[in-house]
Image 1 (cartoon, rainbow, N blue to C red):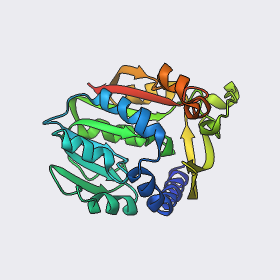
Image 2: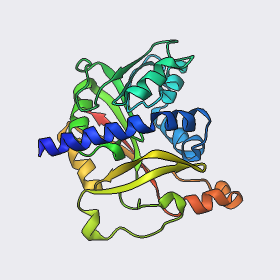
Image 3: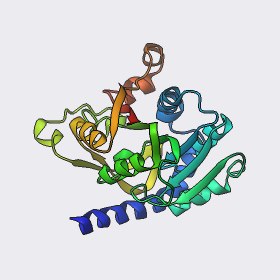
Amino acid sequence: MKEATQSVANLTRERWEANAEYWVKIIREGRDRYRTELTDRAVLEAIGPCAGLRVLDAGCGEGYLARELAARGAEVVGVDASQGLIDAAEGHPDGRRGAMSFIRASVDAMPVEDAGFDLVVCNHLFSHLHDPGEAIREFGRVLRSGGRLIILTLHPCFYVEDSERGATASVPASRYFSPRGVDQRFLVDGLESPSEITSFLRPLEYYSGTLRDAGFVIADLREPHPTDEQLRSDPWWREGFPTALFLLLIAERR
C-alpha cells in the first residue's frame, strides 16, 4: 500500500512539474477567476490579521499567497513538491523580500521544527493529495497548541468532472463514500494545461475524523460562493458555478 501511495505521489509531482510554467502564467496574469474573485478573498478572511504570525503555506505553488501574507506582516515559509514552482517563487521580484522563504518538500514530510508555526494554510492543495492523512498529521506536528489550520479545497459532496464548465451531475452514494479521483487537464481562461491532473476527493467524514485523530478541533466550515450580484450580472459565474465547488475548513490544534 505504501509503495502504491508513493507511486501516485511521484506521478502527481511529475505532472505538476510539467504544469509549473503554465500555472505561473495563470497566476501571475490573474487568469483564474475562481481565485481572484472568490477563493482568495475567502482564505484571507479566514486568516484575518496575521502580522507577527509564523505561517506555513503548504502547497505554496509560485508563492502568491506567501507574498500577500508577508506583505501583511507575517513570517512565511512556503513548501511545495514542485521544484519548478519553488524556483518561480524564489525568482519573483518580491520572493526574497520580508520574512519569507521557500522549501522544496512533500507536505507529508517537511524539514521544519515541531510546534514552530501559528498557522498552516492549504490553499487548493488537498484535492491533489492522494492520501492527505499524513499531511494532516504533519500539520499537527508543526503547529503550536492553539494554532490554526485553514484548508480551501474542492467540495467533496458536489465536485465532478467538468464542474467548472457547467456540469451538474450528482455524486451517487456508491462513489461518494469511497475515495475517488477526477482526471482532467486544467482549462483556465481558454488555456489548457500541458499535463493531466487527478483531483482526489473523499467524504466529509474522512476529513473530520482524520483531523480529530491528529489533534484538531473543527472551528468553522464555510462554502465560498459567488455573491448574488456576481451571479446576476456575470454569465461567467452563472455557467462556471453550477453547484457548490469549494469547501473551507478552519481547525484548531488542541
